[in-house]
Length: 239
Picture 1 (cartoon, rainbow, N blue to C red):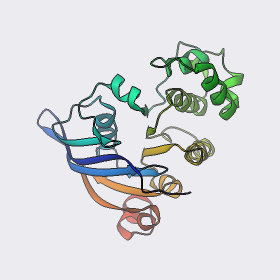
Picture 2 (picture 1 turned 90 degrees about the vertical axis):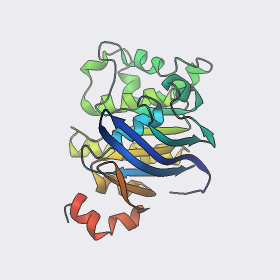
Picture 3 (picture 1 turned 30 degrees about the vertical axis):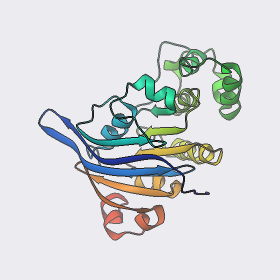
């Protein structure tokens, strides 16, 4: 996987609180163009909170978020999506009572220019979604719903894709398929910030990573460095 040093996202000393509980404590990360950057951490470490703060759905208490050098702190979700950020949420968040095609079209609601071409591209990348285009999303398998969630995010023509815990609840073979899809999207030019409890799978497909514990970044490095780190292996890789 090719890697560049063209910085597109920079988070500096970010603090986010829920009432009296500080969920993120001076968190700093960055994503360069063409990278898959992995957020490793246990449930409750702050991974989802960080992604949602970047998207704009969690208010920022202190710190800055720069996207292509411009502050997006506390922008609305819609404004950030228009700027080029999208989120594939945990739990395969699709509209279960709508068809596959209607779910995909919702992903392009802010920019319908060229939507047919984009829809054709998604169907080319995910042939199963083309086969299921008129099917109600709630009747899809877990893996198919995850593909639909990714496809819907891609319909917004993003410059950065935030992916939150894509492997949860999926069979091992489907997990492999989902990570293969993320690697393939990265090869197509998409930059990805990936939150994942399956540290081994995530780091095997990533370029760099950060380890989050109780709202703090406690370790960072290349994916290979983290895979070979004794503490990471014991805490997250079962070795």
